[in-house]
Length: 230
Ligand code: Y39
Ligand code: Y39
Ligand code: FE
Ligand code: FE
Ligand code: FE
Image 1 (cartoon, rainbow, N blue to C red):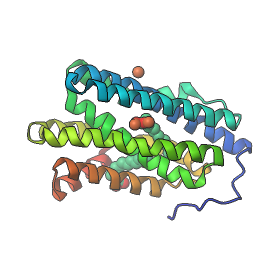
Image 2 (cartoon, rainbow, N blue to C red; image 1 turned 90 degrees about the horizontal axis):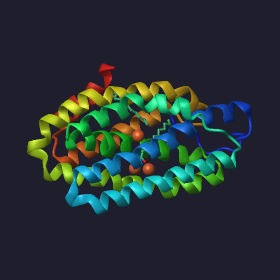
Image 3 (cartoon, rainbow, N blue to C red; image 1 turned 45 degrees about the vertical axis):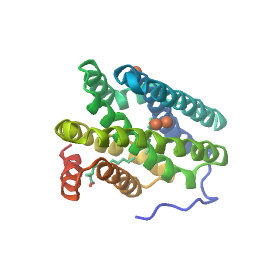
Image 4 (cartoon, rainbow, N blue to C red; image 1 turned 135 degrees about the horizontal axis):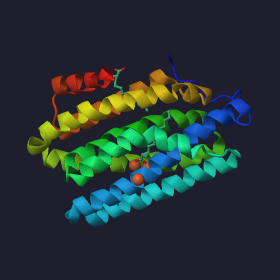
């Protein structure tokens, strides 16, 4: 199904729009907050990349503030309790991996899966956003590509010894993203974001990332299909 064009028929002040926005906006704010925390955790695990990772965490903090402003601009109160619950399983997996020093799993969760989720969602949102939120989101999405790139570069440099852990982490976490997308699809549609378009953009970004790290096409197909095991 084609993505909706930006159209004057979206009324950003209807109760229906604002109700859906209260959950999607909260998910994005909570996601940016957890991304900030995750990069600080990674900065401790990867001492030689500490300065770069602290820099990424600062960007995530600015993203969070930008999206809080988007909610205020529409006079929407984000449903933060909903958003914390939304991310809880992925957040727990990241923290468990970090506690065990599993850097590869942490990078797969944050820098590949979550960043690709953000890149898909933000690119699909931009054409249907209100003017204020569009400008913010355009600035944010450019930086998300650099976060994805950090993970790709590190994992490519450590590919052979990371391969088995990457496959296990993909198997554990890709089905969660698939569940999260399904949980948010109705609200996303109210904002003009089509589920099929989100899946397509996610799979393109994630598949490209796996290829850049060193997986071949057969590996990429197999690992993508594991997302369906939800
Ligand atoms: O690295 C980041 O900045 C990621 C935290 C942000 C993820 C945001 C997740 C957005 C999902 C929204 C789903 C709407 C369909
Ligand atoms: O439908 C499919 O092909 C599923 C295997 C793929 C995994 C699902 C991951 C989709 C996440 C989409 C995130 C959108 C922001
Ligand atoms: Fe946290
Ligand atoms: Fe971000
Ligand atoms: Fe990011």
